Amino acid sequence: MIEVTDMHAYYGKSHILQGVTMNVQEGEIVALLGRNGVGRSTSCKAIMGEVPPQGSVKFKGQEIAGKTAYEIANLGIGYVPENRDIFPGLTTRQNLTLGLKPGQKDGDGRWSMQMMFDMFSNLNERADVEASVLSGGEQQMLTMCRTLMGDPDFVMIDEPTEGLSPQMVQKVADVLKEIADRGISTLLVEQKLSIAMDIAHRVYVMGHGQIVFEGTPAELKERDDVRKEWLEV
Ligand SMILES: Nc1ncnc2c1ncn2[C@@H]1O[C@H](COP(=O)(O)OP(=O)(O)O)[C@@H](O)[C@H]1O
Ligand SMILES: [Mg+2]
Image (cartoon, rainbow, N blue to C red; front, top):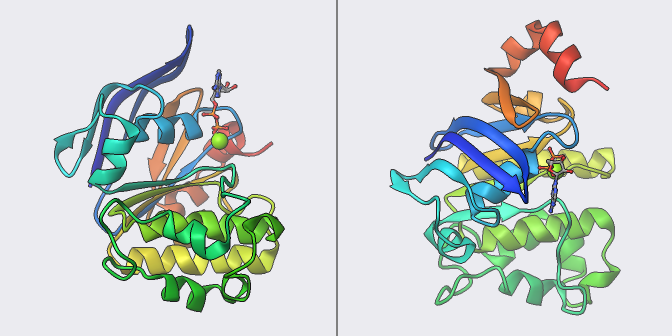
């Protein structure tokens, strides 16, 4: 589905990504773990074309490195950034509508607005109020649902459980499973092992702009050395 090979990225002169190689297959949930500042969000932005990547990024076999974020989104990649970037002056419903692609109508894809409201009763109850009054957790849900409205085949979700209550974390986990059940590939970025260990099929650990471990959650559990060096604070 997505195949990243020797990807580099810079902010000015800072060489942030130093040869990232990873892949996500169809229907797979893959976790990208690592401490703050190691380059997880930059990896998402580079795949998405928001930061120019060097190296190769292939989506369904097609080279997308060098394309614009708009083109990449239209090819079927969704990105839920870590800052919940809702449109605060618009209602929940209007925010969801903005997730549709040009020419796409509600219900055309795998998801519909009604499904979002069925999954998240909080959003349903607040469908017609300004998104600015939603709680942090609800805004996170809304950002995720808005991205899904565009019917991506591959979605990158950046720290979706950050700052959420345990109950909301469980809801996020349920939606991630639902996403995978529908055959959508997911790159789940997290800082801690958290829900990633329960729901991911495979795990990458990043340190200093490179992948330092790749394996299954079970394999990572056995690797005290990796967890100590790259994950625990
Ligand atoms: N817009 C930016 N300009 C300059 N440096 C940045 C910018 N965004 C992130 N960085 C730096 O790039 C590194 C990687 O950041 P980031 O990808 O956000 O890490 P993570 O998501 O793993 O916490 C950090 O050292 C961070 O300070
Ligand atoms: Mg980040």
